[in-house]
Image 1 (cartoon, rainbow, N blue to C red):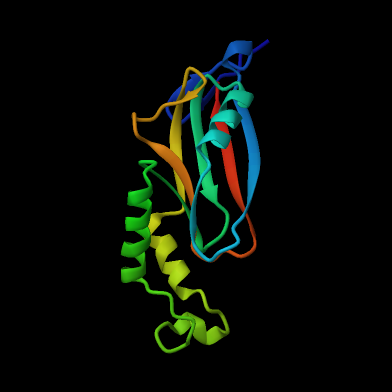
Image 2 (image 1 turned 120 degrees about the vertical axis):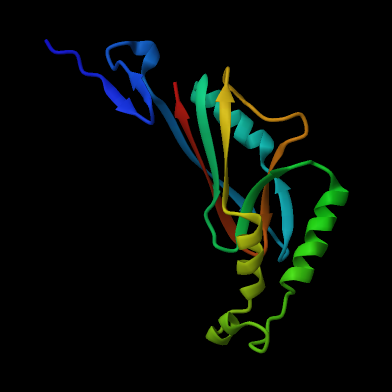
Length: 161
């Protein structure tokens, strides 16, 4: 019998060794944001999913599944969160009229939210080491909603050994 070796992303996996089998976990988190903008910590939920996954060494992708929301990593400090809100509002102020943003000429009122998402980013990827998020001492995972008032989802995809 021939031994099959898979090569991907610069490392080898022997599928005949149980301990080297790739594990995956895919989960969607749902959030209800009653106001237009809000920062929500999803750190604990991501940590719990990493633990559940059994992945000892790997990666976790955390992705906002809506084009008017962001996932980001930074300090869990309320003053910083207010600063983000102020800064983003200066860069892309909310204006539901079609005068400032061409996008709002389509009947939408959330052009500013699309711009804010572009600035803050779509997703984060975090290393997993010893079945834990491998983050710096002040790093914390957040979901940032820019056009709330309805149910939204966040994808968490974990891969590793």
